[in-house]
Image 1 (tube, rainbow, N blue to C red):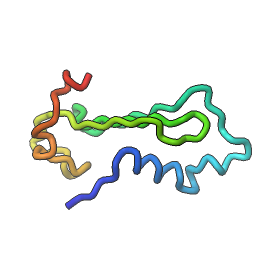
Image 2 (cartoon, rainbow, N blue to C red):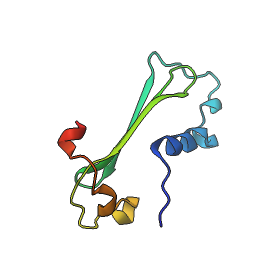
Image 3 (cartoon, rainbow, N blue to C red):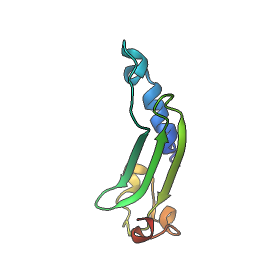
Length: 98
């Protein structure tokens, strides 16, 4: 069984890792607007989309969204991401997600 981190957990691991840490910069980064991070999973078509909205000053999560998108995988993506046809069986169609 493959255990996957949520989009938010994966992002926080990357941001908090020393080589990616904002703390390594002498001058703190300043953002004019909140930061929206979007992540897609899929090969030819998306089968999962996730987004995390971070506060521009604290980088604390303000909101998040994640959904699977129905697709006929033919067992292609399971090896890469752990997402299977069973995972997608009740997922909305791509048109419904937007």
